[in-house]
Amino acid sequence: MLKIARCVPIVIDSNANHAVRAFYAQWGAPTSYGTCCIPLKTTSLKYISVLQKQRVNMNPMENEFEGRCQCGMVEYRICGEAATLFACHCSECQRQSASAFGMALWIRDYEKEIVKGRLKSWIRNMPDGRKMLCEFCAECGSRIFHQMLEQPQVISIKPGTLNNSKTLRPVAHIWVNNAQPWVLFEEGCLLYPEDPPDFEDMFLAWSKSNPVMEKHQD
Ligand SMILES: [Zn+2]
Ligand SMILES: [Zn+2]
Image (cartoon, rainbow, N blue to C red; front, side):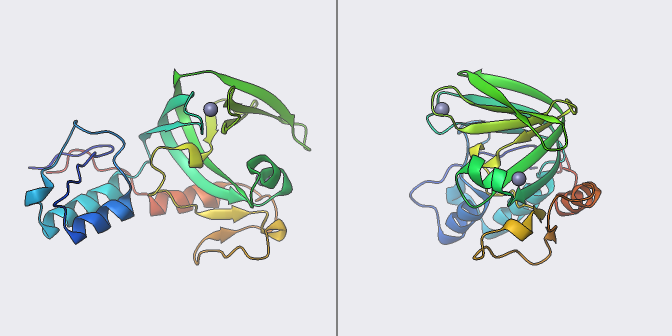
């Protein structure tokens, strides 16, 4: 009987075969060891496929998200319901990320725990009058959270700070009119020239591609 809920740490040893390495590469590195170690010397391909299936199903409509800043001073844990994940190509996000685009993982009805370190913040005044709280590591400046002050039940995680972001794929790109010309968009992603009229289609696309976790499967 195999009971897996949430993230499954696995141990890769020097005898791991090719299939195990491929699994590891696709689904990401373990974030911790020892809570649910699976003896992979005896792991069969069939067993791996069971794990893969469950890993897909557990992907977060409700989950824990752990991450840290670049220097490691800040570590955080967010528990809540993932609502959507998208990339934004607006010039504000390009400047904020110091890169080609920004990304946002929205978590609803969340609990936030700063496990270690200290965040600083500043308030960005949006063109429409709303205010965005932007939180970052006081030491290295890595941006970690965004939150609209008018929408306190939703927090946006900068997903590049997550310990394991390999399983998370954006369902939409916004402000594609301002995207760098070399950016390619994945087939099936929602594309919006600027801000979307609303986020309902993004919520729907996310829930379709990340079905509700099936807990305690046998
Ligand atoms: Zn830092
Ligand atoms: Zn943006």
